[in-house]
Image (cartoon, helix red, strand yellow):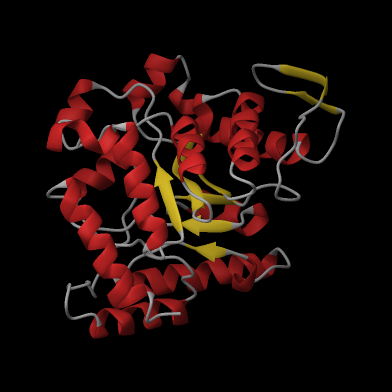
Amino acid sequence: MSDADGGVWVSPAGIAEFARTAEASGVDGIAFTDHPAPSKKWLEGGGHETLDPFVGLGFCAAATTSIKLMTNLTVVPYRNPLLMARSMTSVDVLSGGRAIFTLGTGYLRSEFAALGVDFDERNALFDEAMEVLHGIWSTDNFSYDGRHFKAIGQIMKPGPVQRPHPPLWIGGNAKVVLDRVARSGDGWAPLLGGGTTLARTTRTAMIASDDQLAGMIHGLGTRLEANGRSLADIDILAASLEGRYSPGSPDEYLDTLGRLADMGVTWSPAPFPRTSFQSALDGLRQFGEEVIARSR
């Protein structure tokens, strides 16, 4: 959307105003995606532009005071895990402990190739990185023999404000994702929506109904219990696929949020119009007044 409204969507003033408006409206978090080298084909086929997520979140940290600063999501295999840990730690420090990071394995083969990362190695790299993140944040003398690096007595100073580390949510619908969440994730961000094109592009089956979402949350609860945990130990970020917010008529949507909460959902996206920058700001304010203020 950078060309719309004269590029205000990705201008410093525009980003700061959007973040402040979201915060003032009661929105709990603002997120950046992660596409350092997308293909032109993907962008023209419905993809989106974005800034470096860690730089963008650091900028938003300076423009706000309380809103959570999130990635949705960080493509873990794109980076050396120690570099990623430094970027994450920096956001948490500069925001005073407001960072939340949703992590994923990624799906764009062309982007993996452009960054010199083996697409078929992405799951192994993800699991390795999770070990490194937990390790570097828990010791001042971290060593690790990785697939493509060797750490001998590394230290992360300053460390994150949040202890033992910023919340690490995991995105995706695959069984391996649910197992990762059950073992060590602080949250789950499922992929929602129908459509074979999106499913084919992301290489995962979409969740297409609220009943299906509820079933997957129940299954995640079973996996958590097998690891000595419960749904109460994690956050879940999801929206309803059946109940939509209609500006001016919020009662039905408030009921929908109640049903999501009963399923175990703790976070839900704040809908706003994208037809123009000003309409987005106005939409956030209206949503804050009609829904957020009445749901607390």
